[in-house]
Image: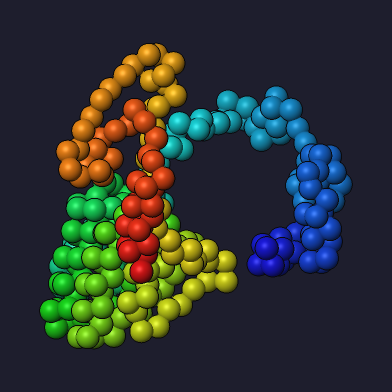
Length: 257
């Protein structure tokens, strides 16, 4: 909040106290924000269009939301144009520093687009460890986390890389959960004042259709034989028993520690 208030204060030419007073009075009406100088003004769409158009109304163009959604982070310079492995396999002109982006949700395997796949990330880290043209590595972390297994595998490989050459973590907007965990492999961590970080935790989610099955009068019987927990994974037609929940809690605790 302090950084946000400071930025508004600098851009609007108002004191931090005045900005804080406006923010503390939320929710505010558009007119109140205009009077306080936080926004420029309040307009109907036709009035705004006329003001923007000036003497050339035909040149006024509005961009719809779906057009914005089709703009990729790469085209705006907010994400790497190439994969981490492609970046590192491009031979630098002289020994230098390798920057490996850890951007997006952390996923097992190859990962989807705009995500951190454990396989290409591990490949990039191993490549950096053996590349004589790279003297040090910066992990640029901008990730909210994701798969615990993938995060642990990437963290382990980053630790092994740290035995060969210096590893520094640079945190972007978000370095939480698995993203924060991966950064722990670095010998030094740098963060922005507004970086959201921390919150390492492990959760598990399960759907239960017990009430829906009861409503539709759908019944199912399953047996795990001698193993009382054998049917836990596939029995979505019922809630877990207290013993089964305790079993899952034990697994989650083990993953956490």
